[in-house]
Image 1 (spheres, rainbow, N blue to C red):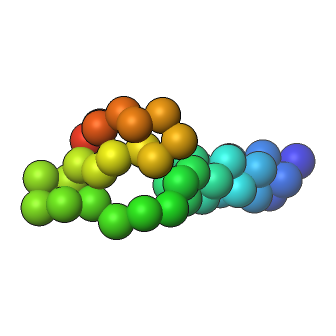
Image 2: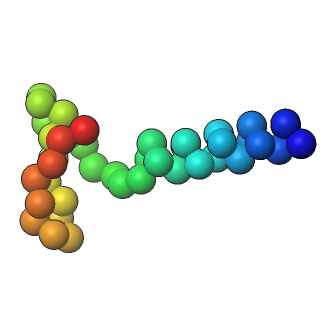
Image 3: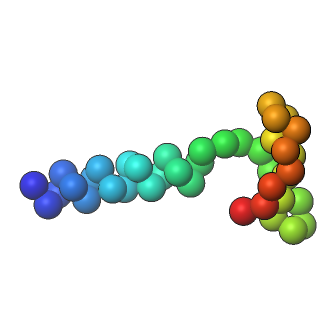
Length: 41
């Protein structure tokens, strides 16, 4: 059970890390092309 929970946590954290594509500028920010929003990570 602990193994399955560990795998599930890893899968969810990886999905969050690669939630969207696109590079960031020198400040770690970028434009969201679908909304026109500019945000930083």
